[in-house]
Picture 1 (cartoon, rainbow, N blue to C red):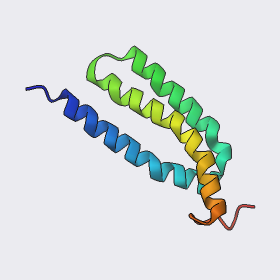
Picture 2 (picture 1 turned 120 degrees about the horizontal axis):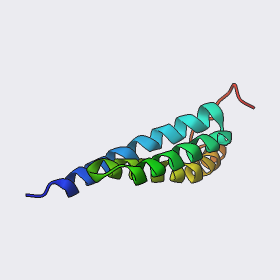
Picture 3 (picture 1 turned 135 degrees about the vertical axis):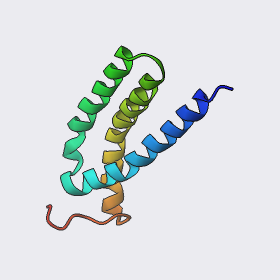
Length: 93
């Protein structure tokens, strides 16, 4: 039996799921100005995916892509905070 697809699906579900609270907390504590960190991390993981072989390269690629997608979500999260859907950090102006 081939379980690689199940492993890939589980890794994808876990990695994307973990990025939701990461984006929320990053916007809360650092604002959208932290986007270059996500860019560097995303590119780093994608480069890591290129230079690794086998099944381990897949989580690297998923994490890299999720990091790049998180940049867009940071800007969207700011809009959600302004709409009142999420709490605003009171110590940040």
